[in-house]
Length: 259
Image (cartoon, rainbow, N blue to C red; front, side, top):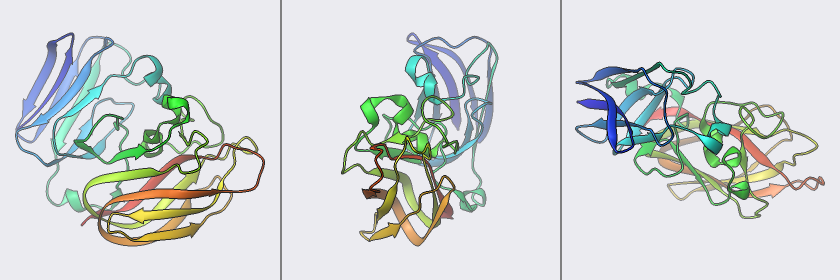
């Protein structure tokens, strides 16, 4: 069984329950502090989730409840302004069938990723984010948006390294996956932006690789062919000698399937 609910001000405002699939229509405007919660009677579980029509579907791996804070204030800067707006909201969730769990896909994609979670995957973390601003969160690289010719509010949110030489970003898959290749999109607001000539990829199996990169706004394909990894970290980011101090990452994708 799975249950989807809207909660706020200490009360449950709406809910729906289904054996393997459900929908929920919430006919009120969201209020600050509202949370959308997806729970299952057993974990871990693979689910396809749509918490908002604008953000669309995401295939997630849950080791516990998903508790999504409806964005208000600064959090709105990193999502489409149409998301969660209005007074009628359609949501959907379904447990994935076994055959669906092994589809080839972007294993990093999660438009519902949040900073403070350890139960919902894929999930991004970083050891530096420029000034702690939401438009420079690590979560901005796995939301499916690749707009990278500027910087700032949506759709130009990116991962900024806060000028730190030892900045690193990690994709957590939550379970073993086979990754064929990565696609990396630099933020390419040149000449405002700089870029990294080399990066090091470190995998959960202990292997590290140094990768030579290119100054471009196009996606850069990095073949890795890794089996059964649970994490990949991009670190030891070597900046070019161009004058800008602001290299950044707009998007990253990991193409593969469940191990």
